Image (tube, rainbow, N blue to C red; front, side):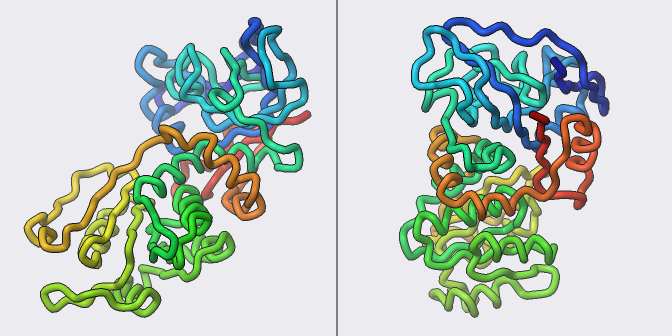
Length: 338
């Protein structure tokens, strides 16, 4: 079978490897769709992960069809459509340092257990939408970390895939208003399409003033007007986001950070002390990998809008190039022929 992997710093190749053999507790998936993550680009840039330099398999956002079932596996049948928890693979994280990757014709799921390693999705859900399951679990964990209550007023900075997934998540959990902030008009249009109540173009508008217009005014502090926003979520990773959010936060507000910040940020905790802001960091998906599956099933048409570009596996090199080019695409999916 074919497998895409990192072969050197800045280089990838599709190589021929043996199709995995299925043990009694395993299943074999025919890959149908796999998303490309920003971390894939990082692995490529550095030449692969430690211990797998020059031979790091790629792909950890899979959706596939079951084509072989081990004799001891229960609850999974041939032809089932499934999404995968890449973190629990016995041979290492799928596509992120383990020995297998989902940018391949087939993917072996060892010790396959429904609800632990895989979840079954209805067959009317497009595979390219189902393959959003892993990154949307990241978004849902970020939402959960901020512990939203029904009726909360929320602002999400960044209308990329994680920000859009978080927007859907907050609305699903009962937020009264979700405002999305970005600088790219097409992303803001997509935010409205997935359910945002309002959007702000921070390149053209005063974010704090607009939030006060949309969410109303909260208690002022030291003579500064504050919006009534309850939760700020940074899904953008720009230094100005944290500065804006902390400067705008009313007493007791929450700031969640799911974006990756590549440089240290200065924070004046003396200035923040009286606001008693809660700062919550979010990484991965300790429990959310299949929690979010049900929301994708219920709202798949909204989630489908997150996919911006689709490439056939024959064009995986181009898919990786586009995904790595700033501003070229939002969520890139690789699909596989029947």
